[in-house]
Length: 424
RNA sequence: GGAGAGGUGGCUGAGUGGUUGAAAGCAGCGGUUUGCUAAACCGCGGUACUGGUGUAAACCGGUACCGGGGGUUCGAAUCCCCCCCUCUCCGCCA
Image 1 (cartoon, rainbow, N blue to C red):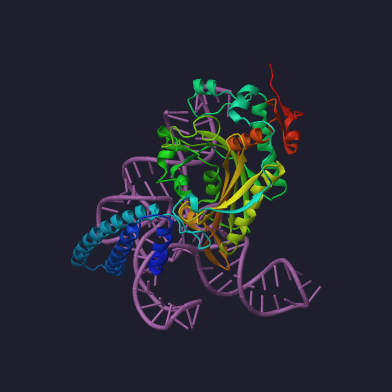
Image 2: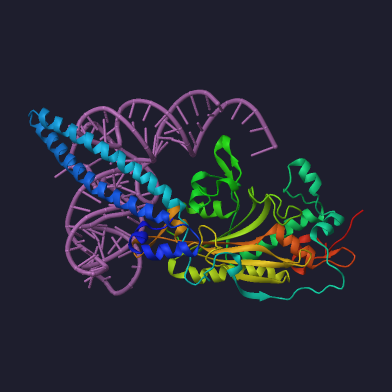
C-alpha cells in the first residue's frame, strides 16, 4: 500500500509512476477526492466529540454535587445523534478509501527502464555459455519420460493436469536440490531457515499483496477461509506481521515450500511438462531491512540466487524488469532466466524484488530507529524455483544416449548417483 | 466436535461506568552519584489519524485505540450482543 501522504504531497510523481506501469490513474482521482472529504468530516466530527467529552465530564461533577442535569443530557443526546450520523459517513469513506488504496500498485523505482511490456526489459548480465551439442537436444519431457523420473499420466489420474509427479531418482533429485539450496543459503549466505504452513489466512494474503487482486490465481479452502500459498513469500513475510521489530536489521529468512497456483487464464499455454504447473517447489529468500539499505540488499539477494545457478554450472541471464512488467507490489525486480536447450528458450527461475515499504505498510511491519517507529523495507527472491531448474538441468546435461549427468554440486545429496539413466 | 478459562501498553500484570492513556513491576530513554562496571536515587514514556504555527527540526492542540465489530449511556477497558484467537480438559486422529 502506498502512503496516502505521499499521494497528497507528490501526486504528479505518483501519477507518472502509475502511467509508466500502464496503470489507469483515475484511481488517484478517487483517492484524492475521498481523502479530502474524509479529512473535512473528521475535523467537524472531532470538534463535536471534544465538546461531548468536556460536557460529559461536567455532568459527572454536577451529579456528584446533586444537581439536576436533565437539560444538558438532552442536549448531549442530540449531539450524540449528530456525531453518530457523521461517524457513519466517515466509516463509509474509510472503507472506500481503503478499498481503492489496496488496488494501487507500487510505484516503480526510477532506475527501471520505462516501457509497456517485457520487450523493454533490460539484460543486465549473462553468465556462462550455451552448451554445445553434437546431436539435437531433446526436451525434458522426452528425456524424463524415457528415464522414468516423472509420470505425468498418473499424476493426472491422481489429481489432474498440471500437477507433477516425480519418481525414483527424479524424486530424489527434487529432495537433493532443495537440500543443496537451503544449505547454501543457511551456511554461506546468512539466512535462517523457516518451515512454514502451506496455507495462510486472508490477512496474510493481503499483507503481501496477493489479496484482493489475485484471488482467482489462488486455491481457496472455503470451509476454513484459508488459501494455499502461491509462494513462501506469504508465510515468511507475514512472520513479522503487526510487529515492531526489536531485533537488529537486516533479518534474512529462507524457506522451502510447495507453491500452488491456479494459473487461471493460461490454459493451453505450455501445458506439457514442467514449465507451467499448478504445484511446484521453491526455496525462497526474504529480507527485512532498513530503508536506506534496501537497494544494496536487492543486489546481494540476486547474487545469492545466482550463486545457486553458478554452482550448478548453468548458463543464465539476469534481467532488470521494466516499469510495465514488474509485479503489483514491487518497486524494482530482477528476473533470472536459465537457458533450456530442449525448449530453445529462456526459463524464469527466480524473481528478486524490492518492495520498499509497500508490503510493510499492508502487513504493518515496523522497527525502531532512534526512538522512532518506521516501516521496514521487505525484499524477496526465489533461490530458486525447482520445476524449471530441473528442466534446465536435464536439458543442459543430457547426453546423446538420453542419460543425464548430474552437476557435481548435487552429487553428495544424491546418495552416490552421478547420472540419471534408464532403469528397466 | 463438547465443556470450561482467558484475551489490557515492548513484556508481566491491576482495574470501582465519570481527571484512566490506563496502578505496579520489568525493559527502554535522560539525569545524579561513581575510578570503571554494577547498584541506588530522580525524571520521562505508546500507537494511529487529524488541526494549527513554522522553510524545517520542532512546538501547541484534538480524536481514536484495553482481541475485532456492533449496541446501551450525557459518559464504556468496565454493562449487553455477535465474531475471532489462545489455553486447559474430554472426544477424534497422522
